[in-house]
Amino acid sequence: MKITISPFQREAMLLELLQQLIEDKLSQGELLMQLRKKVLGFSQERYAALVGINRRTLSDIEQDKENTTLSTLNRVFKPLGLKLGVLPRQPHMLKTLLIQLADHGESNDHI
Image (tube, rainbow, N blue to C red; front, side, top):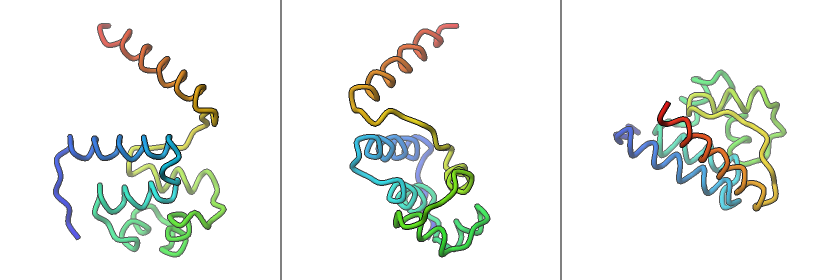
């Protein structure tokens, strides 16, 4: 299944899906599956081969069944330009952090 979308569409889709993850509307596994299918247009077999894991492991990760190592999770998200990190669970703390990061980015835009 070949998907042809512009880089701007790809970025918009990525940001929308990440927002859903942050808002707990999407699980980590669901995020990976949506990105694999909608952004890359890859089958599980093709994506698993790309990241160097077996298809069953990828399926388990996408279904949030697998207790996977951080190393493997970073490997499956790397082709999508993502890495796992530590974020606050409390919505107000997460919002504050994101605002601070945005403000910091804006202050560096004119350097």
